[in-house]
Image 1: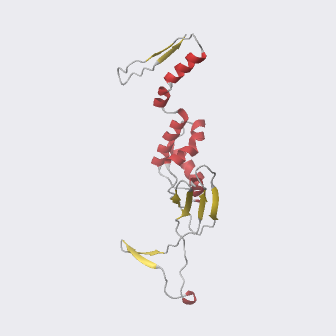
Image 2: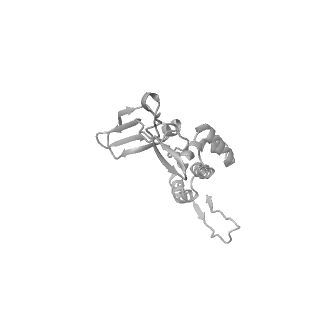
Image 3: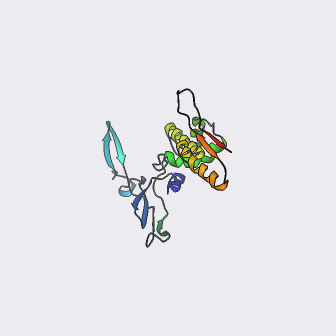
Length: 197
């Protein structure tokens, strides 16, 4: 759903989301031309005031919708209803284009060029996706992508004992010792050592 919303630049949302049904609708703004008698006359659009200026509000509902469901939790999803015609206007403010979504898009780009500046990444994403996003969102997405690539250091450190047990199981008679030094100063970084014999 997120990929389709970003690719088509539409405001899609989950109208129904449970274990056996998902319904996605579009809540984009539909442009309706003003109609009068014989093409002339007063407009039927409503007017609102905002800071002393007249704003013409002419919202309709977009008919685009997709419904998928399954009989129970163990079965595959089936598409039941597709109304694939958008009557709404495209937008650059797509709500589902989150930093997590952008991070998954840029993982390969960060892997090939980890020192790419955030501004260059921002320009590339705005040009490629044609969606407006802030520089802060791209910064968060880049840090998430770096964590996806290198892994979380605390999680990797937690696997160290499992690695030692695996070494002992695959190489019987081996001695493995893990030394951990307490951090004495913030400016000096001491990494734990591991020796295999």
